[in-house]
Image (cartoon, rainbow, N blue to C red; front, side, top):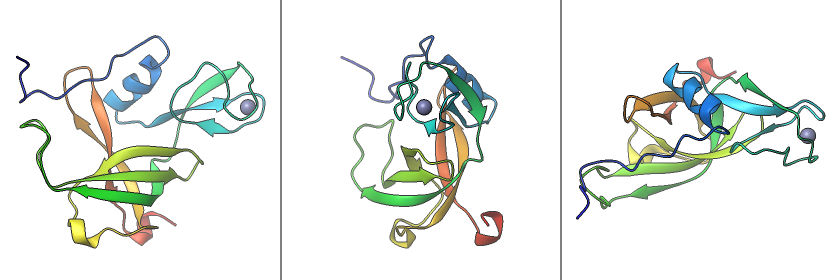
Amino acid sequence: MSDTSVRILPPVTALTEPYWTGCRKRELRLQQCDACGKYQFYPRILCSHCGHDSLSWRRVSGRGRIASFTVVRRPMTDAYPAPTMIALVDLDEGPRMMSSVVDAEPDSLHIGQAVRVDFAAWSEEISMPVFRIATEEASP
Ligand SMILES: [Zn+2]
């Protein structure tokens, strides 16, 4: 029987290692296409916009807005306390990522709300990007 008090950790691969190294350093990094300049998330070996295979890792702002969200009111296991807020965040650089919103009242969330990345240490190797509500002054 598996231990339900332990979070399931993502595997770190050669492709995703720069992303997770960035998270450990509290930097959100995305791949940027060297040909068309667009950003993408999640990490891939080809640009999802133009198909080019030359991609570079860039530190990005960590700012975005909530595109959609849901509030999970029942814990999946002991490792994931509830309520927890899962959100799709449209990053200022373009990509949409799924993450969670922390330290907010579930009933206060709304679509379009400005958020800013933070990082939650899940293990020595894995720090997970999470988002906090941003003050409008911090997100021009
Ligand atoms: Zn491209």
